[in-house]
Image (cartoon, rainbow, N blue to C red; front, side, top):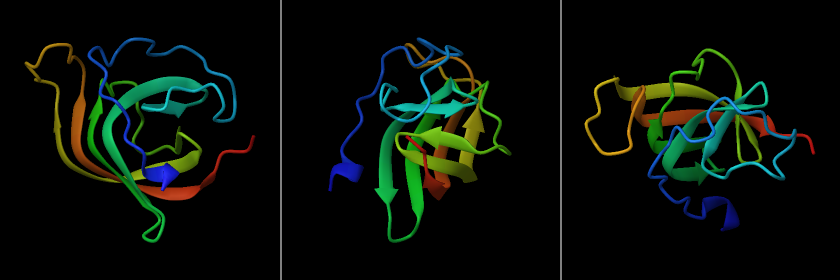
Length: 114
């Protein structure tokens, strides 16, 4: 299924953080989460499960600007992060800085209007 295609891991997840992006999902980074038209985090290994109405992320990287209580956008979906298994600001892996969230589940609220 094309909704489940793999998204590559960025070596520097903070690259482009806070930059405005065009509305809709056309020219957006496929591994980025957006709020208010700006990149607020990057994801690792998203798994879109349309039957369950959710997206699971192994990790959400450089997520300091991500407001968990607010709706966000990922690829063509409007989502709300509902569960976080683990959160840390101490990640010693190369290219990782800021808050890292692991084992995240987001509810799919709908689709981004084009």
